[in-house]
Length: 110
Length: 114
Image 1 (cartoon, rainbow over the protein chains, first blue to last red):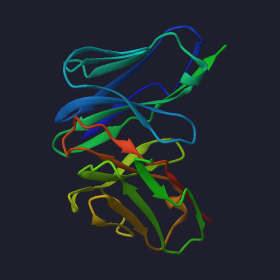
Image 2 (cartoon, each protein chain N blue to C red; image 1 turned 180 degrees about the horizontal axis):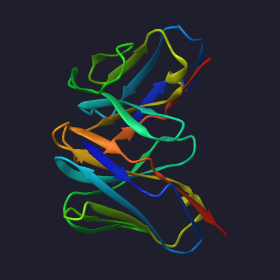
Image 3 (cartoon, one colour; image 1 turned 90 degrees about the horizontal axis):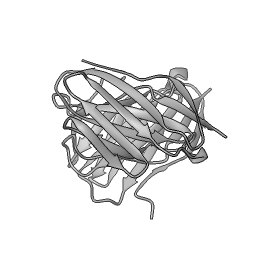
Image 4 (cartoon, rainbow over the protein chains, first blue to last red; image 1 turned 90 degrees about the vertical axis):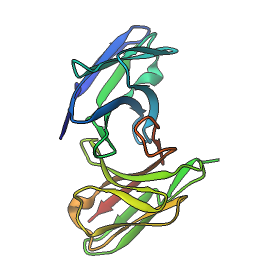
């Protein structure tokens, strides 16, 4: 089975840093994805972690701890356009499938 | 060029009708998927196809049937539509069957059943 938890909503100020946490319990876990979804649009790929540690990609970074079943997405120098839902998804080897959390709706305010 | 395209974008229909949603990808990917996103924005896998073979079939009603004429297309046919089928349906593709390949999503089809 699988269980993925992330906060429902977060608010942060333009120019600031925000960390969106995700915890997962997935049998046969083999990778953690983060996707961004603007309202009314398709999810778009942000990052992928399979080994422990931090992956940095511009203003966005993603961290994974397999032993703790924990990941976070770090957004720096927030811009208004970063207001979106951020979806955490865990890959399960047995089911050969990607399971999504319910997403965190981030609102960036001036 | 649109990588993953699905039609129609909006679909409004009455209970009991049969409808189809089409999906095409021009990325040369081997695996295609259908996801359902409900009103709470929860994205759930429905089906996936790898080289025209169904490899995942989640516990969805058999009123839903995926059809893949070739590896670039994965259509979704729904029989006897019900109110609870109202949702946004996303088609997606990935390069490989394995978990390291990110999904590329289409823009979604918003289905409203009245």
